[in-house]
Amino acid sequence: MSKNLLTKLSALAGLTLLAVSANALAAETAPVLDSKSCDPPKYPKAALINEETGTVVMGFLVGPDGKVTESKVEKSSGSKSLDKAALTALALCKFKPGTKDGKPDSVWAKVDFVWKLE
Image 1: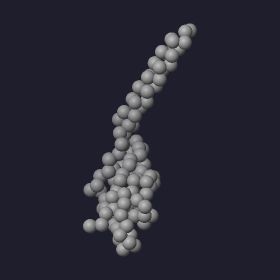
Image 2: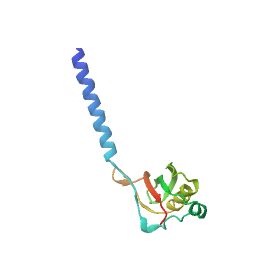
Image 3: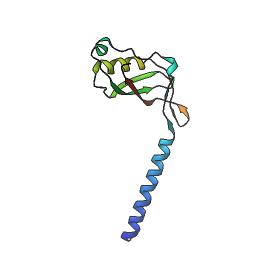
């Protein structure tokens, strides 16, 4: 087999793999937070006194029933108390479940919460 033909076949195989990966991703939808189902996090007293602010990025594994089964801080606000308060409060929220191949399934969701003083 010629080197040129092998190069073309390799490129075609790469495109096919890319197309399969894109289809796999398209078959999954992310969960959506139902903001009416939960109360917003309360500012921790010490963080309020110290005038701490920031944005915490959290990940939630949402089950097919819309409930959080696992949670984690992906990027800290810079304040452990703000991170913990946001994670604790939002883990109690309900989500519209994500889907895989059109059926409700466990899917990760990302939520950003901004702490600001008003």
